[in-house]
Length: 96
Image (tube, rainbow, N blue to C red; front, side):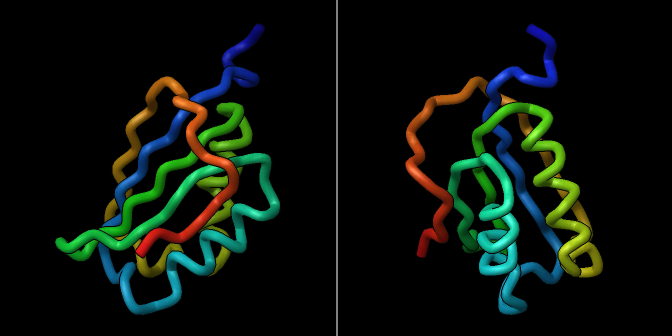
């Protein structure tokens, strides 16, 4: 198997003007177009945390689509951490 079809967990932290602008709802809508599962939530420090699992190529496309969905100008910094999947998501949801 190539790396492009390897199942992974993508842990992202977005900073910038990412709270109070519909960021999480837009990301959830974008997720519906991809074979990914995960969660997104606001953090107390003003960042947004995104956890997503899927094939690595699908996650890369999802990440790119988030920027292309009109959110790029809200993002000042994006920190990406790749991990092994835990398979503990059933869909894609916004957490409180």
